Length: 454
Image 1 (cartoon, rainbow, N blue to C red):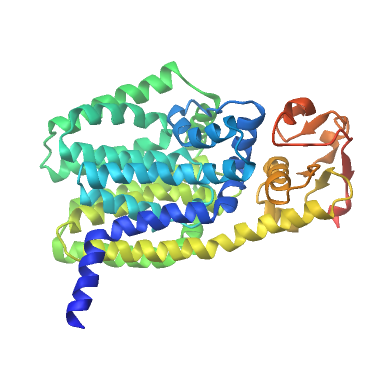
Image 2 (image 1 turned 90 degrees about the horizontal axis):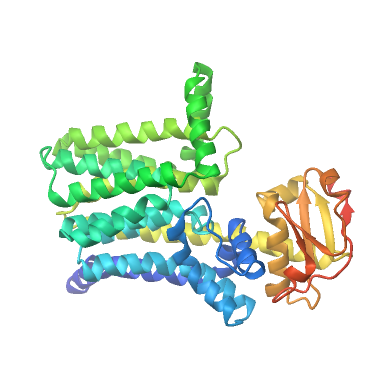
């Protein structure tokens, strides 16, 4: 009994991270509907089918990698279900590839534990809103750390130059790790750190100056404007973020707080904890300056992953020599996977709700006005046209595809009910362009249904 216990413990210690990554990828296959039919993902799939290209948003070119698999499936005429599965799976395979490079090529156990912990422990909603380039950027940052620790100069140059193109906020975790390593190395900069710093700064400035884009510029202007006009009453936004954090991460916060207290008392890592707290509260303050509207749990969870990265890096780095670290990380990851499975219920329910809505429609092209039930299941109504069309085409297998568009202002569409158009929140598509492959949207006029006000 005792030896069996030790064998299990040793197996978890040696291969637990591999097991968790395997579960992570398998989940992407099991929950392919929930992941591929939520907000931005059906929008991206629609664009790949109708516009016949991979759309690059805000000059975030590296994100093209995760869309190659579904795009190739479209090009060879694979069934739409296969395209959706490929889209869901491609994101998980990206992280799995990064994990393989870290774990088996660079043989960096610290960074492999950091990666699986970051992808699972602070995650539930964002597993289904998986399209964020920030998540991919954090994985690449961990790969960069492994390359720095290995002293692989060529790899450090390549990844540090690519990294800023994922997401502008990746600057903060990069700075955190860079300063952390400098402090831990007695304020000495080794050659890999110097290469990474120069490559990152050069690429980040190039992106800002030579390739600006409207989205990043608008966020930057909003940040500066709100900072300039900041008043004491604006702290209510900080309170909202704290409340959101408590609602979704209470047990994690209590556990992390206990570990930080343990570090402070027993290991006296004052500099590391000071750096962690400074970056964490500074980042929360930045979020309150940028996001002043409605808080969506899936979106804010992705933002909170940066703070989770601060914490996980600190704990993994300090406790790396402890035999119990892999067990603690894997245990946290397994709990995180269970949380993901539990959260999946909502995303399954919303697909069923939309499917039932489509089947009950008397007219194949309908515009609804938003009501509380629709707000609950749609989360954001702008994607409803793309989601409903893909559900009709792939899951319901309707010979003539139905689609609906939810809006809070039906007057916008009253002069756009032409029978040869497919309406979305962003653009009007001619039916002959939409119906080239996969879709069979009928040539009928839209009907506006106002009963949803009741």
